[in-house]
Each structure stands twice: as structure tokens, then as C-alpha cells.
Length: 444
Image (tube, rainbow, N blue to C red):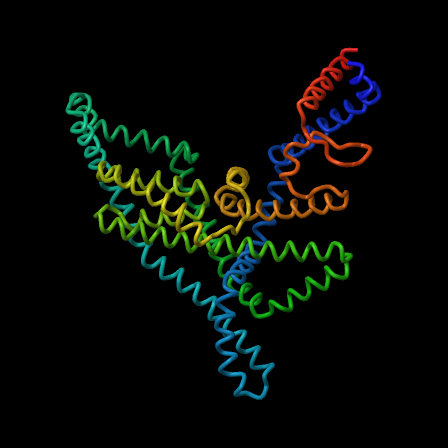
């Protein structure tokens, strides 16, 4: 006890207590400010929404240019090899080749989108129309299946439930629930909601087409825009800031490009595998279900399960046993994707653990919805890389170890030498006594 008292004087305990209280109060203050900005200050959300709407075509154009840049470079290199040795004005020819290759790359992505929409959308509309028009028959089919699989033990209840008036009553309640969930309290509200949805879709379409031209301009003069940014950065910031910023930009390009391109390719493969297998096993609605599975697969971790819920439900109402078989098939498919296809295509494009992937999806989805779930992972991966670099820099500056593993059993820092003190049995008991002394000090 005497040794412990020599280690921690009353002044030391007061300093430790002040540090703890200051940290707690600062954390609480930041949480309150964050919550206030997020939930209470509606003007902030409105301003952010306005800014997002204004810059939407620019953002779309930037991403189109970002993803089509490899395609543009492929065509540009081919045309450079063919035309440049045969012309006199090389500079002008290069400019023309860049414009043509940029337009070709954008035309390719537009052609792929149009082919997808023309081939898939009509089948999806037909499928949804059929499901809606035959919903009563499908519910009766499910009840009949339930009666057969239970050995007709609940025949009277199921037969009563399969009566037309009861099914219509159930469908009516389901529609009422959906209307309430969508905040449609009447026909006027429903029409208004649909109108606003159509307007929003129209705005996105307009933004996309404006973004196409923005993307072409980005691709044509990409070196010029890069040079402008570097000129501003190099002249405003000192070298010790410029170099880390350039490293972060390069890392961001690698993370975003690797993640999104890999995810898109992975989702297309999964969608095609799902479509082919559904045709082989003669399952209903192969186009609609494969599109749902492929699109939701873009979302890491939760995507396959988000897509499986509506897909299994749609098939189950048509053929209950096939719905169960499809559920088993989706589980196998996602295991195949998660353990073989995904790692082969994506590799370690993000460089973060499963916990941070889950954190990114939950927080991104909670704050920004579907797009937040998609963009959350690369954004968190980039932030993780920035913070890792920052703390490595701090560690080197303070002559501390930069490896995270070396801090696992750290209990403090020796004030005399500045080196890390590691846990021992006596040390853990000493810390317990420290907190006991802090509690006694507070009582005084």
C-alpha cells in the first residue's frame, strides 16, 4: 500500500480525474452536436439536399469519366498506333483521337444500359403484371400446398381461409397496410406520391444525360483538370501536406475503382449464373429474380439476403416447393460467391476487416439509404487508410512503435523513458487500486 501511495499522489489523482472528466464531457458534447445537426436542424438537411441536387450532373459525369477512362484509353492507344505515324500534325490528331475515343467509351456504356433496359424491363413489367392479376390464385395455391404438407390436419381452417371473400379481405388489408406504410391515406395522396416519384425519376434522367456531356469533357481534358488541381494544391500547401494528399488521392482511386468495378463484374456473373440455373431447374420468373439478385449483390454482406427475400417470396407464391428450393440455391450461390468468385475478382481492394465493412454498411445505409450502403465501404476504407497513415506518422514522430499489434498488451507509458509499459499481473492489480483511489477521492 505504501508503494502505491508513492506512485500516485493526490495531485496525480486529481490530474487523472480531470483528464477523464474532460474526455467524457468532450465526447458527450460532440455526440450532442452531431445528433442536433443530424436530427433537429432541418435547414442543414435541406441545404445539403439542394447542394446534392445542383451538383448531381457533375458527380454523375465524374463517375462516368472515372469508370470509362480505361475503355477510352484502350481505343485511344489503338488509334494512336494507327494514325500518328501517318499524319503531320500530331498534336491536332491526338486531340481528335481523344475526342473520338471519349465519345466511343460513353456510347458503349449507353448501349449497354439501353440493351439491358430493352431486354429486361418489358419482361419485368409482364411478370409483375401477371403476379398482380393472379394474386388470388397464387394465395389459394399456397394454402393448398400448406394443407397437403400438413397432412390435412388443419383442413377446415385452411379451406375457410382459401375462400374468395377471405382472400380478397386479406389482399385488401395488405393494400391498406402498404398504403399506410407509403403514407398514402387516400387516392389523392397516392397520385401525389406517384407524381413526385415520376418527377424524381425524370430529374435523375435529365441529370444523367447532362452528366454524359460532363463526362465527355472530363475525359477529353482530364490531364488539364488534374494539372489545375495540382497547381492549386502545390502552391497553397507546403510539401509535408502535398505529398500525403497526393498519396491519399492515388489510394482513393485504387480503392474506389477496384471496389466498384470488381463489384459490378461480380454482380453480373452472379446474375447470369442465377438466370442460367433458374432456366435449367425451370423455376418461374428467371429474368425478374436474376435482376433482383444481381442488383442487390452490389451491396456487400447484406445485399444477397436483401435480394433473396423478395425473390423467394415471389417464387413461393407461384410454387411453394420451388420457393424453398430457390432459397437453398441462393444460400449455396452466395457461399460460392463469397468464398470463390468474390475474392478472386475483388481481392483485397478495400483493405479493411469484416467489422469495418459491416460498420460502413450499417452507418452508410442509416444515413444515406441504398447509395450509402454501396458507397459506405470504399469511403470507410479510405478513411481507415488516412487515419492509419496519420497515426503511423504520429508514432514515428514520438519514437513510438507503429505496429498496432505491439499495443495489444500496453498498459501505459513510462514517463522517464517514454517507452511503453506492458501488462503484468502486478500491473493489472495496480490499475485496479488506482481506480479505487479515484473513487475515494470523489467521495471526499
